[in-house]
Length: 416
Image (cartoon, rainbow, N blue to C red):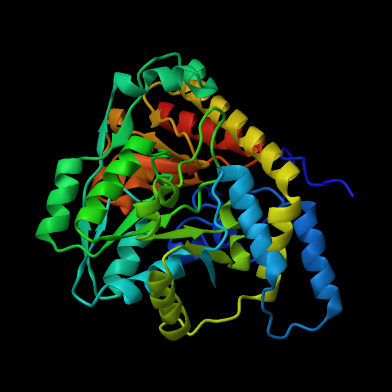
């Protein structure tokens, strides 16, 4: 049976499907008819193999408690080996409803109320939310946005660099001196690493990850590496798994993965948390079972993950090519039509951080521009931390016609 869902140009009507992306604008104080390119899910149908697996399960008609056998774990192991050259044979694979719930379990397992937890802003906003709601304190080793010739050659080899027509690009860097100082001063026990980085689309290179590992080992810091976007990597780039940087790093790392972003099945709520160290795995699983009260994963999520990781490769590769073409289109459109809006060119993720600071607008004026004038629903950069002020995150995992409509609205609103 061949893959059927390869028409990524097709527009699917998601309104009236309880879609968080499309159906809850009014509840969040926005006009009902805004065009949404915010939350990280795709406007593409998932692989037909996943659809077929869920249909077969639904037709059985009995939805009792469901558990995973060896074939499930072999599917996860096979995917990580094929796509990341990461051999997790013998590692513990602990299922959760997703990565964010896993962060909550890690906070419970490895920290106490009142403890400081290290993050790197601007970063995925749920990091901050879960830390604070769990009674811990957020400490940020703020990333530095700058330019460097060090990466120019790598960018020049990429199609995105050619489209941008420049050999220098802004990107986020880690201030390692501040990183270590914060760990020591705040007595950090747990560091949340966003790898690849969201919203910056950065693939942390091996040297950077080795430096993180060296500092964290020195100060006995556990690393929770959120790698949910690990599969959405643009051509000529390769994701670097933090736990695979060294044998030592693997011993103090909790790696959070999920097929949710990759196959557009986040609503099925299935995550695979991969841990080598047996003691860390036990502490984490005790928190999953205890604080979360979670043991068996939901049945459709299990079926979907197994199908994705064993039969979804053709869809996955085609999806990546389509999104990369959307990125090239976005870069070209901005250059030609909206030169005052720039971007941080991502190496990974289908989320792009647009830089609107050259427009000289206040936060309220930018909100007026995006929502009322352009009729768009994007993620305002300030939700990722103070350093995101002046940016907007746009989701390009959509049909080209949708992206064109959004960019045209933005251009017209700016030129109004």
